[in-house]
Image (cartoon, rainbow, N blue to C red):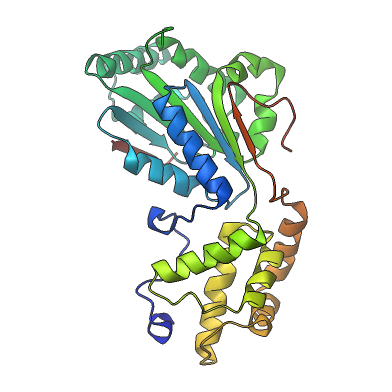
Length: 304
């Protein structure tokens, strides 16, 4: 609707996690570095957490794209609490059809696959998105699967991606052995105002715009009401561009953003998120284990 009006090549604030639009804020760049380090150092387990809409899935999609032919990737993107066992989902993600579909047969089929891939010079990477939904039992199954690795050789790596509740779950006593195997972890916080300005400018210019389609005070208001959460920023910016087009304006002003918030009830959602958001000036990086403090499937198969 507004593409021609603003001379965009595509929508700058589309909701799909497109790596082409990934803006590397300081903490997103750090998260990316930690993911790269986890893969290169052959960490058994890597943990990436963040609030809903903080950009976790976009980072994971980028990771899958960049992996070379030394890694076979299985992505389970829609985990839920009804998982009785992790094994069938991992098999499906990797495109494996076991001869014996019993629990033991599934487990053995996975181990045979990991060892077979390793024999071909390839590691296997399993990625579980929305991992906060996994039960303690299924997480323990993942730990047992990692026993295929020896002290010197790593055939299987696992990345867990989820909301902050995942960290609370990992702190439970019954998962202490699992937590001790997490070698790399990172928590994504909300964007600062400076990062929000750069984020919006980046998306506008990637889409073919000038970057000046939003007044700086309008961006400040969007940041305040979204709590710095990228997904909410996208929603507000997209709707603000629609309103600007409707009024034949060339720039989104604070008054226009106020009108969007009033009409779309995003104001209340944005305020609640802003109040609950993590301190955007800090983010958690650690290597070798989980921090002591509490920070607070559709299935896709891809071969890198």
